[in-house]
Image 1: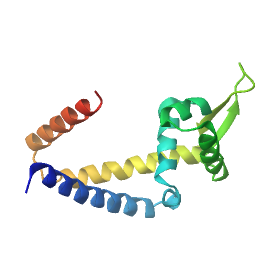
Image 2 (image 1 turned 180 degrees about the horizontal axis):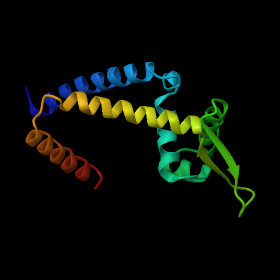
Image 3 (image 1 turned 180 degrees about the vertical axis):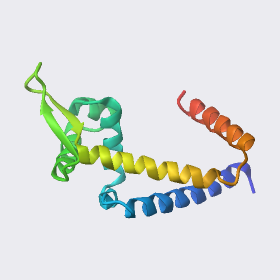
Image 4 (image 1 turned 90 degrees about the horizontal axis):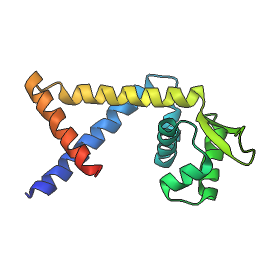
Length: 146
């Protein structure tokens, strides 16, 4: 089997185990609401957290979508009490989007699920193997960001 085909196969296996591990983690908490969010909504939550109070225009630029698409997605997240919008004090035409405490909790729980998966995934490796694996992942992610 070609190297790329094997990599795809292993990525698919890892993805399934990651979903399973994070699903188990979510089910142990009161925040099973993550299962009611689309992947698009999760991307929005991560962007809002990363950008710290982005405007609708900034989100539209980040995702290369129309502002109306952002408005619709944010409206749904507001209805779920996961994000809030606040009018800019500098320009009353502009609104900034922030995570609510519930939104922050959801992302924290998601992150803990990822840590659980990382621990499960690397438990079969010794210290040197973990360090090499981490270096390889860093090399790959650095290259992808170019």
